[in-house]
Image (cartoon, rainbow, N blue to C red; front, top):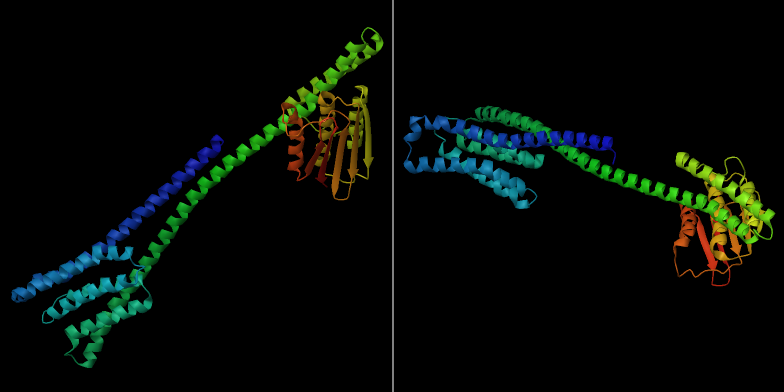
Length: 417
């Protein structure tokens, strides 16, 4: 992975981490805030009782029960609510939690009926927490709370006064529900942003991994391509040069003029090969078909084979039309490598090259009358054939080899137009 890409990934990770930490802090603050609200309202509701002489004039058992119910309400409303959220998907969780809170609330209201105070405001957290379920559930809880208020404080009043008082309390409940609903939506939005930030971090990591894999794959493909170019190009020139030198050595004494001609050709090929190597280093080798057609390039390869002592026959059928340059280059490299293998290994006297243009395919066949090969035995000399097969596979083509010891060697490649 490049240094710039790595720096960009680190910066993005840091940004996402900062956002996530802030959201987690806000989420924690929200949880703490709910507990603070419950405890604060409970204290505000209890303080008037504790400051009232009428409260302390109550029987001791009643004071103890009120304080016990108040304590259970606070503990269940804070720690119990957090436990309830963990098991909210279980059907009994809501009944258990709200059942305890309603029972505590009923006891507190009924035991403080004859006393003025603010104990009734403890119904507000219960109503707000019921929003964790459906609106139907919330309405049911609110109606139960209003019923408890009526039973505790307004049962002896006239209908008109009862309606007015219950409407006042109902407005308080409605305001609490609206405010809580807004807070819950904001909390849900924060949670959604937190999930998106986490997904973004994970996607960024996956993207970085994919980019590294793609970069590695591209490097490997380029390395293989360069290896094929060096083998196909430089190997071809060196093979022809070696054949010319061997021919010159063989006829040096008997036919010095022909030997000199062979050495001159070898020298020219050496210069061409050197120029090709230099060009490969600078431009990774331009296509040999840049300034000539495929037929002309193949004819030149066949002529070089004849000069080395082979009988080389080239046959081209059909019209090339508009073909993919990659297809033509693959055909050229396959012929070049085939001729090189014949000179190196085949001990053949003849090679036939057939190129056939079809509407949807380009078919190339090379066949020699040499010693053949055993395909079950692989050697270093098979690298050229591997290179041809790689080129063919990259173009979604196919390659078929037919050979056996002492029965020549033939390969056919078929490339889609």
